[in-house]
Each structure stands twice: as structure tokens, then as C-alpha cells.
Length: 62
Image (cartoon, rainbow, N blue to C red; front, side, top):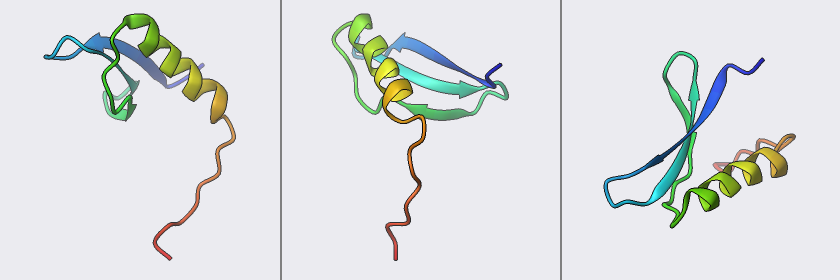
């Protein structure tokens, strides 16, 4: 079972967003952009889930 949950919500501008929240309440990740519909925000979640399950961590500072 996961220790995190995706939340879908509307921001102050009426745009749909998502965030990944750990069970302890900390936000682990967020959409970084607003979407025009809930469906598009949900597609963003599915994209993250599907495209980065084994994403590599790289050091870009040197």
C-alpha cells in the first residue's frame, strides 16, 4: 500500500491541479501548472505514474 495520495483540486483562479501528499501531510510533488479541466489534471497524474516509475536521479550541479 502506498504512503501517499494524489489529490485533485481547483486553485484560486479556477484551474484544476494535482498534488501528491504523503500520509504525514507533506506535499511530495505537484502539477506545477493549472489545467482547464479535471480530466486533464487526472491525465497529468496518469502520465507521471506511467512515464516515471523507474526514473533515474541525476546530479545537474556537477
